[in-house]
Image 1 (cartoon, chains in turn purple, red):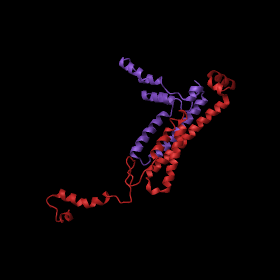
Image 2 (cartoon, each protein chain N blue to C red):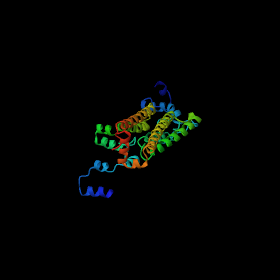
Image 3 (tube, chains in turn brown, orange):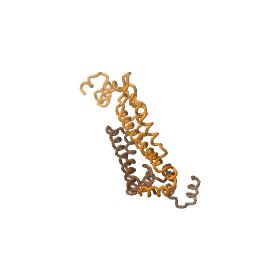
Image 4 (cartoon, each protein chain N blue to C red):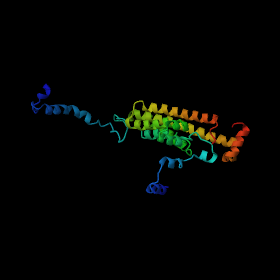
Length: 116
Length: 159
């Protein structure tokens, strides 16, 4: 794996990190065995889209990604600086994210998007 | 200033020096901590006020939050959530035994970690229940083969 990257870099082929990542996504066991989406499916595609800067695509793949990223950054800052209402905010954001994930999964079930 | 200049050692022509010497006796008492207070450990959040943080506050918070992104990755979310829940529960018990020794901010973080862990466990459990329900409803063979699965769904009028 590393060898192929290095050889590509050495031969100065155009190396696209996103392209490489797209072909090396981890697929969850549920999806790999059954072909049916699990509640977390789409997270990696969504993070990749976010890294590329496509907010809309990211939301389409997995609506909870943007709040999750915000939550993780906020938690890091909170652990460093210790805001007074930080713990409460983290709790509320976490509950919101859980609700978003559940709604997203139910929406997927109702719209028959589970089986690709 | 008039009191400071009254001391015999000070030079009245040098106001800066006299300021420093005057402020010294004021600064000394808070600089030496009382013997019963412990110094806060390295790397803690909050100024401590002589109180320790709960030992697992940060870990339980981080694990509780990570239990959602790891929700479907090989059941890792369940593990993270349970670990966060247990660690936070232990710490809250420890705090209740001796509330004065630990800082309030770390207690808040621990509680947040506990709640995040509980939510993560609930989500992971729902996912596992859904998985088992699907296996029971459709059978292992149908799930392994997407075409028979689609046929089954068509028969049942779901798709």
